[in-house]
Image: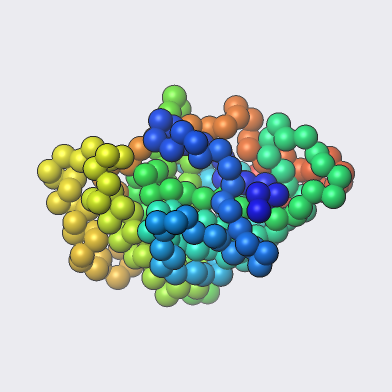
Length: 230
């Protein structure tokens, strides 16, 4: 099924040219893996979208409830629901699905940033991508209990490293970059390591000059109440 809105605000550049669709889901709204794709883990966490600049970072959207995050050997996919969000430029449809989903393919992330949210034992993992023609970096935030988010960080780090090492046709790596990714794939990081650089990332580009989210016109909720943007 493709009857969903995809809230992550980046599009592929030069590498997955045909990747114009949302993740394929079954009737239970779970990811249907590609033929050569393996599911590694599933988590229930909260997600938000951020833009990181040289001097400031801002949250541009957030889903209010926890979503299902699936980690595979190709990508990260999340699926949740929010009836008040839609893709910029999309024509409103009567009876449209409230399902929202997004994905980050392992070609994209340039680094992982792990931090405490200050709310009990909760933690936040930023999956940061580099972007074309802008100094702003789109990032997906994964938020949940500290041990779960740290485990998720390790799963993503290993999956990204393994993906890039085994696909030289997609990622051109120098010998030092291959060595760094080999360590990520084989060696566990120090607990609580705040930043992990992921060599060999490919840039993404924004789908729209505008913010990727807008509230559906049929709902009166204000944009800042939906996205967290002030």
